Length: 381
Image (cartoon, rainbow, N blue to C red; front, side, top):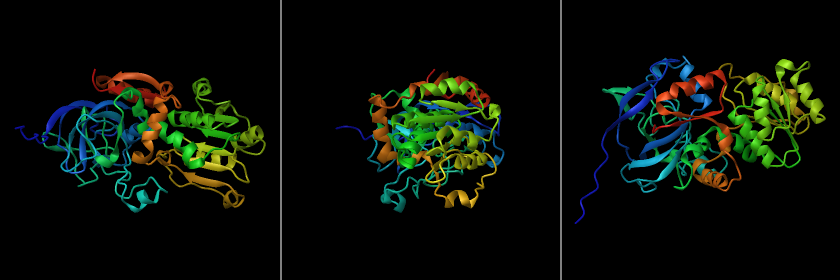
């Protein structure tokens, strides 16, 4: 007669903990609670560093949300499963996602939105289920980030914020589809629906902007213009499909005017990938007066209001927002992973650095200095 399965218990592991805004992350031993109903505990394999991790780490807007464990672009293996959950089993390989899909709320059922009403963007440092943390250090709560917190050897996520993937998927690269690269790909294919032969302009050639370029090339765009103040990004952009470049620091005419001259009246599609509301206005001015579509992907650090002359919209232009490229995690991500496995999309060129977990602060410094696209952090040294 087989013995009953043991219930998961609290475990202790290493985590990179931020104790205050902008302070170097400290390697600490944290206690990780077992998963509750509708939750899974994951042994994190790899986690890539996203610009939003750095932005929130530097921000002093929410000092009460420290100590905190950042990280949300991650791959891992299910270590334990909460009571009553049948979707996942111990040993499953998964991607984490910063917005979930409950598959039951009005938004999920509609098929028109990826903004799940139950598992939307979590900003308060807690789990969705009970507004509590699953991390602690000697009894002191440690806050989550985006309901994932992957800069820890183990983490707990809601089952709706994880997607099962094939066990033969390269874990050290597929983690990029948890956020940034997927966001750019989806902005082109799902949100803007870029058409063959069209003209595209991209503001910001970081990971998101270059993934927009890759997707626009795959959709058959005839012209892809990259706008960035970092000249080192230009050569990199060519590998992703960018056909011409504008450096605002070297341009002797307004950017919209330069783009309209290059595109015979304005780009068909403009993508703002900087996180600057001024750039949103510039992008809108740069697209075609009659039918231009501008998609904003960036999250602004300050001045969240967008100022736009109403005449730009009356002429026929469209301004859209895009969160995670419009992808619904459980519904859409498996097909995106399959495209990667079949080499229809490429992730390897986005990875500029592979870094051990103990050297995670190096990744933060590289991102701050603009010297990387994606740093993949390997949890096992």
